Image (cartoon, rainbow, N blue to C red):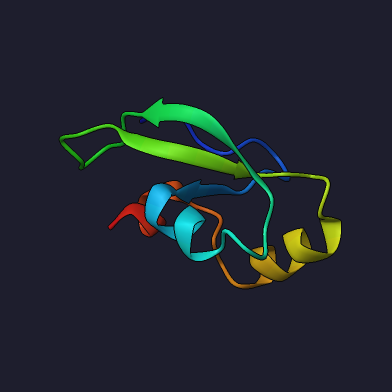
Length: 70
């Protein structure tokens, strides 16, 4: 199994990061090799500097990178 988000961390795919660019601060964490995908996926972590937005994303179900990358 590949890398997963740490406790309290939300990882986003590049596509989701671009869609949320204006409303959420993120930091690139690098390319991840995910199970079921042939190419690495560039991952972004939601910055903890935006806690109110962090809880809104968490409630929206963006916890798993593999789900966002499909």
